[in-house]
Length: 68
Image (cartoon, rainbow, N blue to C red; front, side, top):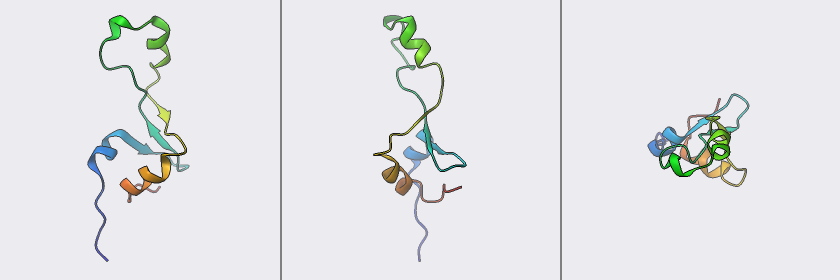
């Protein structure tokens, strides 16, 4: 059986937690911050969020060896 390839784009965007949840970074913190309200910026300050349940199966296929 050949080895499966890890999708490098997914590897950079997602991390698997010890319990099997998929962690991702929050959006809206890269650029154009002058136009965003203080509340928007503060809400996105926490660097981690969890992936939506509907996306988890697809992300796990892209990261075949990331099952802790």
